[in-house]
Image 1 (tube, rainbow, N blue to C red):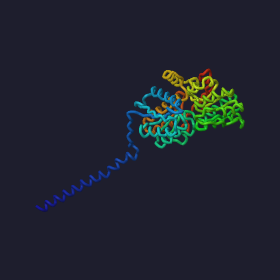
Image 2 (cartoon, rainbow, N blue to C red):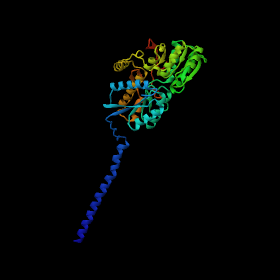
Image 3 (tube, one colour):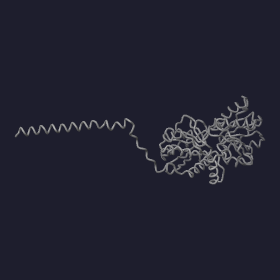
Image 4 (tube, rainbow, N blue to C red):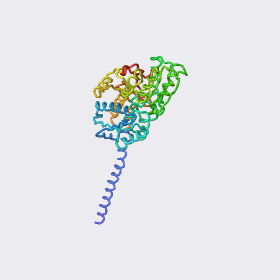
Length: 404
């Protein structure tokens, strides 16, 4: 009896061992089966969930010396938001922060938009100096930015996440020199420059080099007269300019200083043509200078008569209907800047900053100024209109297209 029981136990143990070895063999094979698809690239990470609201930050000069620029930029952005309030089927929320027209505040505004508001991207600033301060913060945070009318090349240079909805000063300076020499027949010029700001200093230098090249005369720039932001008495500089009798005075400064310069130039009997950059393109300049602005000319980002494609007409009529004034440099760059960001988010199918950046690199978008594409430094490749004040109104004079 004991022998039969022992045999039974022995056979049971053999059976259990056999079952255990089979199970182990199946378990050992399982990792290979599960790893194979991963090794072949079949497994993918789940797509990130989209938020209930997509926040776009707006860092602008709503108070301080640049308030007129910020006001027009904000008008353009608001119109664009009204035109296209959603992207990817999700409402867009604009988060406006006033940088008070100060570089330090622009950096703080960018920090708030990133850390507190958690925005997907930032629109602004219209000022080159403040855009550079902002972009140091946004670059470190890897958040895409779209400068509006900031034209200094350094705004985007060396920045992976910084883009701009405007042309840059090397081309603007060339366009101004081309207009001065070819259209006006200017042979000599004087520079009158606010040396406290990056924008006028940079633009004046680009005009200078192009004017010398186009006239073929190293001495065609007769003088470089300077002042600083906030100055209102330009008698000394203008008296020197009058004694030199230049054909052109290139004064690419902010509108408040420009208005005072034009008033005092007329009082001194200066007959030279005054030419400036796109910072002159705000209604306040003519309001302050009055009849002294007659014949004043400047390069700009937009004039309704310079662009005749359908999108330009839609923008112009919508802006006039909304605000009862004509659009200009700052409103159009605000409008197009918003549309460029939403176009990139739409194509990215995501609010992931890296995907938005990659989509921006592939941009070919038709906005109020025609097709906008970006060069290697993320600068807008766009035409430059030249405007003259005639009878107190802005009149389109000339258009310089990219590549000219």
